[in-house]
Image (cartoon, helix red, strand yellow):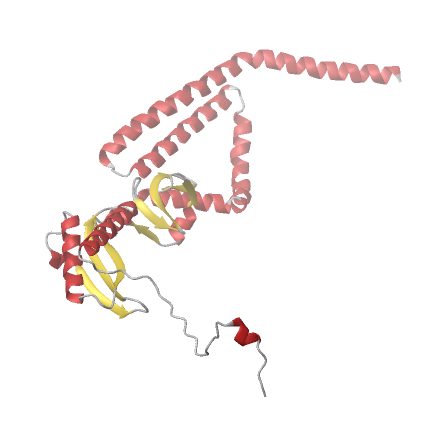
Length: 299
């Protein structure tokens, strides 16, 4: 029993000493490999910044510039990693890893199918000129400013300043309304006036008020006005006009401003904007005398 323990101890100690000797022997290579990794890391940051500055002069899409700079940085770090493994005499291990990558790549690709699809979708979105950083878009039930297009997510900042991270794949597969592609936006305003109103006066006053409120509208003739229906308590109309805008927030501001000015104009001319009225009709006669109700009928 003692002999077996001694043999085990000698075997273990021999292994540990051998590992220690190998570590000491390869310590200079390890230090050099670490230095190489650190150097290539800083080189990747510098080169990425340089490439970004050069590309931004030719390409106006910030999202595309960001994608290219990130990919260039990853490539440089990968080159440094391969050099570090070669310095540590792990070239055979590196060859084994590369050989196994072909087999494991299929398994990893199936496991990360969603992630890879988002990555490729992010690259495609970066090349799209119709969607850029700073655009105001509406997609997948969210509306806001595009603040980032990464390799994974499409980031939108809503009007309430909250950030929404949408998978890139969903952006490619669903419609996107981009308010920033055009410089004009049409405002729709619905309202109603009382039945006793002079409809010609209402139409002329509304169009003139809109024209006076917005500088980009040169004359009342540019404002569209249509009476649409005889409502339950009012005659309803639809008013449409164009403004210079490239985001939905300006649309809300313009509509709010138009409502305020129209209300002021109607008040000056005593034009009524009625609220819904319900008339309750009782056909049976009700007695207000409790004595009459409680008195028994005489036969």
